[in-house]
Image 1: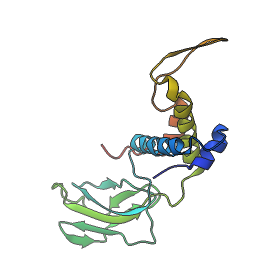
Image 2 (image 1 turned 120 degrees about the vertical axis):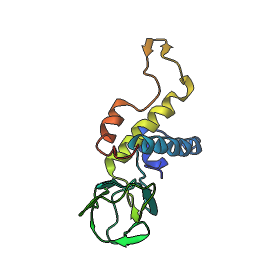
Image 3 (image 1 turned 180 degrees about the vertical axis):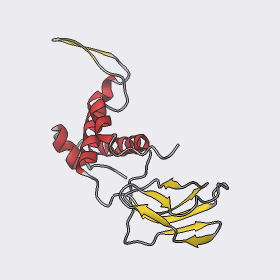
Image 4 (image 1 turned 90 degrees about the vertical axis):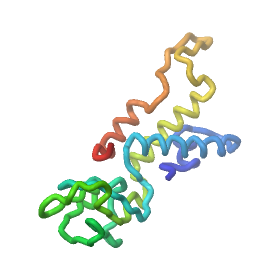
Length: 175
């Protein structure tokens, strides 16, 4: 799922013309995947089936969960209604005893992810993609010499400002 589009990125980065549109589109796709990896969750809205070993709480990979769509939880193949789902966070809490811990004994089918990307996630993708786009010709270098002097650059990876935005969306419930 792309977290922004070429036109929004060009507006953010004051990028003119269209000769680099294919490159920008590719970079948006790659940065969006990098961001989703950092977040440790799926953002694209889709129906999913996930399997879990058990426990009193389970963390779904894609949220927010669409409460208007069917949500099915089966334990050892038997459907249960003995749970509560926080639709915003994707946390499933079982109301009675914790289900067994057999591998993949809990099956949850649901629809989760963002129908539209929140503005600050879109901004974080623009920030990081613009950074990668501007730095693509001096990739790997830590010092850049110019007529007016030299500057030291940070290594590749997510920008600190991007991480600050993303940390509020980050899922720590998956390994």
